[in-house]
Length: 192
Image 1: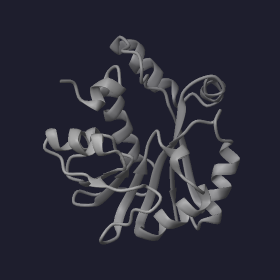
Image 2 (image 1 turned 135 degrees about the vertical axis):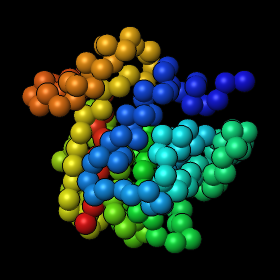
Image 3 (image 1 turned 90 degrees about the vertical axis):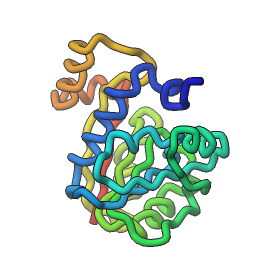
């Protein structure tokens, strides 16, 4: 049986590896032993790419809980809007799930209340205007924001040289912004 991660991503290793690299690189640093909450985590596949980080996966779908358990991962069954960890965390992530927030500004405020260092999430600029999301982050008490294009294909497995060229293109400035008008997402980090 294939896992949710294998079904959701054509080539999960480069996708999740690069996502993890950006979680670590954007905004304040994360250190070995830091605790990270991954909201809407699916089967928790991202955990494999964050060695040394204490990973807490959270998902509202009982099927994801079962899949995570079948891989030896324990994730928490909870709605991302209401979840609160038993103690503060260094970072909170949310990928492919911003649309599940009932009130984006209230969500950022809630998550910011238990997150000590940074919140990291993906943002489709064709779905949500970047300026609106940045305004919500700042209104929620997260004034520092970094955005980075994310050009790793989710639904297509690409030859390694082409995939590497796309990742290099993330730093191309105006060309990256043009590409984002038609495809791909940003990874956003926000902090105090």
